Image (cartoon, rainbow, N blue to C red; front, side, top):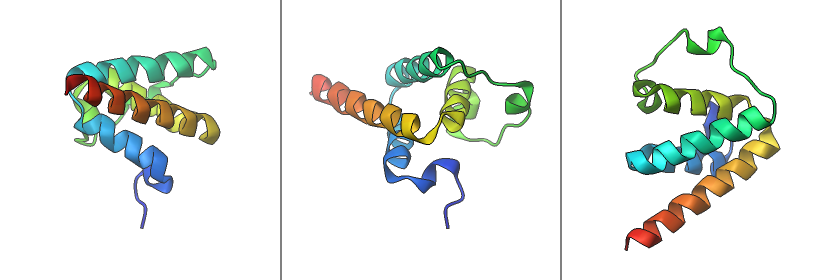
Length: 98
């Protein structure tokens, strides 16, 4: 059973899992990217998005939390496009480190 919002799509699930396992530099870049994309689409978060914390990896950093909340509310097709960009970025980042 899928219990997390990103488990419904394998590309989105992979992107979120890769973000979680990434270093802070990568997480910061990706969080900024997601937030910028969402705001360029005219999306905004309301106070209800910030009224709970669940001990998830993104809950320890406000920027990461905000990015994941934006990713959650972006339309499905754009969410998949962003997820593919994230996967590509992380794969390229790992190759650069080798």
